[in-house]
Image (cartoon, rainbow, N blue to C red):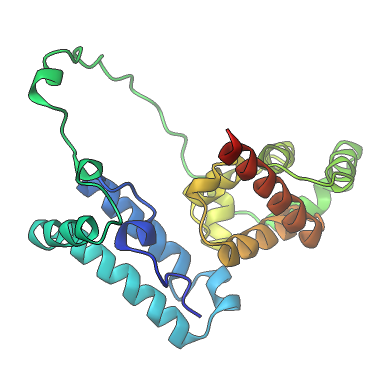
Length: 230
């Protein structure tokens, strides 16, 4: 199985055609977190040979796009092949437009909370699941035909669980978890991986994984179709 088949380097790393070096590096790290040997998701989905092929594709994409000369040649290949237009790779605005850009405001310093202390999440959720509030919320979500990321986020927050805790246990990157909860479907991985992520997420929240997967994918399909029709 090669879920990257037919995808170019930018699609493999899930970045824009004009992504800068920092964005490429961040995407590369996130991809490794998903497909590395210790990943709970890929361990259940792929053989070692398949995982090796996926990591090789990620590595090739990264090293090509991080090398200015190789990236320029690759971009030209995409342009010549009709995959993308030259303007899509433009990173800097025209000179005349630069003069119109207002000075950037002074950045606000954001205090990042420290990573949560390790705890047995399964035991924590099992204990909290006995509470009437949690029971009611699980029943409410389970009764729905479609399930959105906001439903899952509400359950997670009601259980007092942080995304960093889920990452530490499952190695599913917080970027992917956030994309799931915010319904940013264009930022989600291939469906085979998404199903695995949703299964693990649901199991941690102690809600029926099959229903969560089916409901979320149904909601995703409906939302995607609506966007295309506009």
